[in-house]
Length: 230
Image 1 (tube, one colour):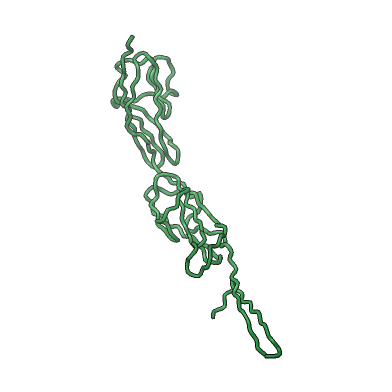
Image 2: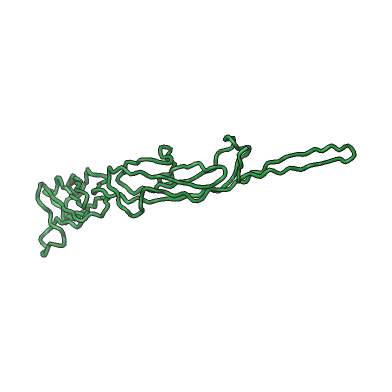
């Protein structure tokens, strides 16, 4: 029998001198304990990745009796497609992959009972570089003639958007920072479009362009001017 450092064999002998008969009973004691915290190899945290890049992660967990089962988690959800070594196509978002060595379930080979050992975890947060993305790239907005309107579009990007521009019918809408008079009714500031005292001619198609180091994206706003009914 190979030597197992996690198991010890104890033997109790009983002997009756008159009849010189010896009996004994042997008991094997196995010590269970959790593994060491796992290590995630293949990625240095803080190093940006790009959308579409192929990245390999390697999880190593040492020690533990019984040996640890490794489970990958993406955020707080287990991902059965990730196991030990996995190549992940990077999505345009920040992803946390957590390695969670869990105890083998009751009934697994080599176990006579369920072992309630604590799990140990390690995680890495990935910063993914991607061009700006508009969650809702095509919107229809109703406004009322004679009122003011503030139209704000949502955009996600890493690194942050460095430059915004708004146009209507290919005509650039000036940003607030470049306006030095009070004659402009339509102006922009980043991802926000301002229209004062809305007129019917303000209806139409507006395009917001966002740009960072990774690329450029557009969002289209269809502005419908409604007449106030008295």
